[in-house]
Image (cartoon, rainbow, N blue to C red; front, side):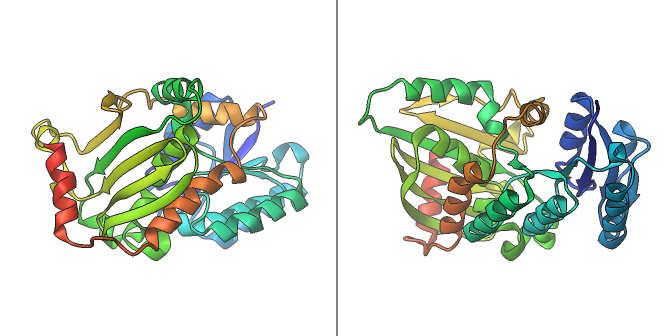
Length: 318
């Protein structure tokens, strides 16, 4: 039987991936919320979904469904709201007797994970998060290779993710570190999850440069030494990307071998949903390592907070 979904953050960047995943998984959206009303995307997937711009009215509608016909209640809440609201919206889902599937980061602060885990246990509901890179074929193949190695092997890893954003980014909630968690959390958390999923937990963190547009440094993981560079500044894109009019550049190199994973993203959210709805997926404890690491990076004191460290990262990109 199709399940009923509600979606919070229907006007956001990632919402269409969730809408598509709900539709392709054979379920239905019955309600959606966003404070902005430019949500015509809903018609592409669910023409009949009730839409609200005020949380209070959305909350009342969800409660009405909960108390009505059991077949009409909301079974799942998809949380695509700004990062700093994830915690509250997950709590809303549990309060109305629904399970939650939340975009990353699950929360901004590690201690919020403890409270959510306690609420999850009390409610008997599930909290799942979207860690779609764990389902990417190239990433899964790399993990399988590393898992087969004997103990003691330490790899040299280079991770670069540059995704150009215009002035709007810094005016929006994403440019407010108290709401987004900063660059390391907002655009880096799923890469930090990927790295620790493959190479083990972070042992040491060194931040060499950090500002509102970029973050760079080194990680010592159980099985790797990682140099990482994250940026939303268009000027950081290598010449090859700018000449090809490509707004993003991803590079993962392990011991000098480059792993291409720019392709293969299509359908990953649907795969996440299907795995979750089959009883699997990733939960609070799976999200913990990446949330803790991004939080540490955000609050770290840069070891070399000057232009020299940034120049070194840029030069290596060509």
